[in-house]
Length: 150
Image (cartoon, one colour):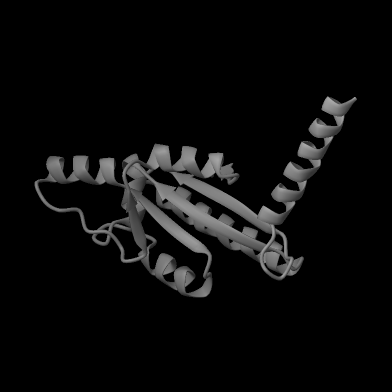
């Protein structure tokens, strides 16, 4: 019986901790979403950005907060290239509009592209280089982010 009480207390403590961790300082529920882009297709890039806007609008409408990270790797890194991105103006505008929006660029992909093209690969200023896009997605999911691949 004593072991049951200890286990029950631990469960209650963990549930309480998870609830606290998913709320901001004002008690608003906070959602975490990771979007995956691995295709060099303007339709996929625009669909991803549309999804980002729709998710944010939904949670704003119900008084909850959302933290979003878009992770680009492989051919999808073109989304974040300063010299090639078909959506760089949208990224710039959305980054100003949505404070909890981040863009992660795969460092492995950037290095491979640089080697293949014989030049540095310039990224939009909104992009944060991570070591590996895939590892970033794994890490975000382990932190409780929901995973979306448009």
